Image (cartoon, rainbow, N blue to C red; front, top):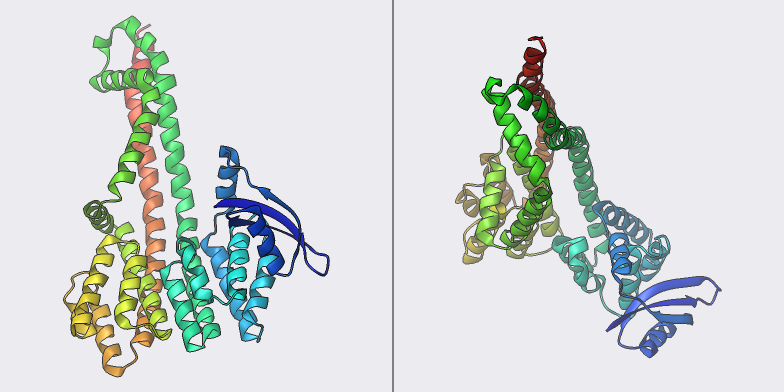
Amino acid sequence: MAKFSYKAKDWSGKMVKGELDMGSKKEVIDSIKNNGLVPLSVEVVGHDFFTELNRKIKGRVNLKQVSTFTRQLSTMMTAGLPLTDALSLLKNQQEENSGLYSILEKTLEEVRSGISLGKSLEKYKNVFGEAYIASISAGEEAGVLDDILMKLADNLENQNEFQAKVKGAMIYPVIVVVAMIIVVFIMMVFVLPKLTGLYADFGTAKMPAITQGLMALSGFMSKTWFMFPIFVAAGAFAYSIGIKNEKFRLKKDTLLLKIPIAGVLSEKSIMANTCRTLSMLLTAGITLVEALKIVATVSGNEVYKKAYLQIAEKVQKGFSVAVSFENTTVFPIIVNQMISTGEATGKLDEVLMRVSDYFSKEAEESVKSLTAAIEPAIMIMLGIGVGFLVVAVVMPIYNLTSQF
């Protein structure tokens, strides 16, 4: 299989560009003609490093793009527009070299050939997610695709809005922390070594222990600073290997949940996301066991993944949903109580959505608490750092100069 770029025209004379993965140039031309287009040129796409890097950067599809696409597709289908026409319109609204354009182009070709939308999107699970594709497939089978798309759009918009709030709250702390690290590195590697000569003229024995320790550390860092990128790269490599191990992921996610404030925020975010997704899957007509397995994969945390898989296994064995949730120690009491109520009334999907809304509001409050806690903590760290430098660097200089 090779990647070909092509240029063609439709019967109205509009220029159409795109890329296809085919075995030969002839297959590409045949595919273009089968789609009602007139091929103008077909060329093999190069595979040099910079071309591939540029393709990967431009080919990324983020959550906001998926959310916007879903909302637009939902609106078009609710208005009575056929699926192929809706996909064609949405494809033409994208930039031709964007990742979403390529996805819609290939999806449109498959849908026109008789393949369902859900089946066409299966190869893009890394973009849309397993829950999204499962909901689309279930909606097509039940003939309620427009309703499912509307619920998916609501879900994605809520998720995107929450992520934007978290990112917005973390911008200031991240910038300050990164600036602190850069300043400390410059001081230790380039500034303090220049003062070492001044101190040496008067003898290090006269210097306080804290100053001598700082000078020794600065001297070590100035001689081995080129090793730090290697350490960072080695750490990233070790993490990339470790993250493939289930026990490592479980331990990492367990520790993350124990971090003050941030751990609570992560827990509430996961609860809001998983309950909303589970509600949406049940509304789409997916069986409870299958829905629980899907939610486990999209939870984003190994602790909750393990819990949801255990619940799915117990439900499959005949246990009630309420009992299965109560036998785990992961979920708060309110979740177990609401699940029990939903199962008893036969409105589990509605109850789960209410639980999701509750935890979404709680997560927003946690974001505010996290922001309020981080800012004074950063100020304290800055104060301690400045005080340490004054005691270790400035005061000895003042004492030396005052001797004359």
